[in-house]
Image (cartoon, rainbow, N blue to C red; front, side, top):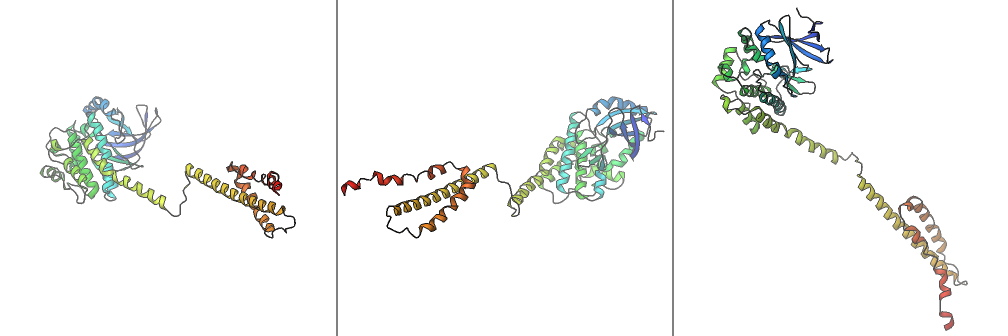
Length: 384
């Protein structure tokens, strides 16, 4: 009897149980080799045919490596019970999430696009899931979906003893060809995903009732589509849930179409937030470097103009005073004393803070010396 604390094949130490499915018990475990936490799914059967099937299919299942898929790491057997080692996903199943209520159209399209991408990856590898349902879609802490139990539904078909129990629990998501026991391939996964997405929007199963009622309903009609869907989303779901598998699109096409449906929500929200941020009257944004440079140049220009004006005023005062000095008998103008105090502080204050930003100030301040030489160069005396 396997119990928490046991070590499988000398490598996987079992921890507490995490759940009990239709055909297996799930344990949290620790990989003693890689030091990773993993999930171990221990099948409740000792049928040798299952172990042989696992050994044949393990290589194909282990190759499935996609962000939207729960990766199978290894398989083995203990006490004649086959087990699977899987990536550990911390979170809730989509079935548990839907117990809280339906999802928005945008969120449903987002989840559907990611899951369809994972299915497309598996279909290229030649693997069909066969049991896409909310209970097999795990939502991690970041809100990303992961499709689990690849190969388990196929494994259940190896023996008739377990097949009935599994089909009984998943009849609401069976494709019509599965109900008719026909060949099952990738279109069955696309159909089941379409039914799951409809349930995400409505919060109700498309085909409720007993096993027989639900199974026969798949053969009688396609699932009813919810009202109010965007036309593109309505078309995707209608095509994915067509009764004829040949009429259904590929999982890759569904992923691309759903991504287009989910894309407008974040795209429209970003510009609106940016406009609100830029136009907010209370926010002060830093100036770009070229604006700061322009402002410094503008201040330098104003400073140079101010200094030039002050220098001009000083020159005018000096000329007036020089003119007054040529007539000693004439009293000095009464306005000169008032002009001097006005001109002195201005250049001192201005040049102290601004002068380093301009190179034209020295040229303007050195122009006053020429006036004293004018009386010596004049030619008016000989004419007298």
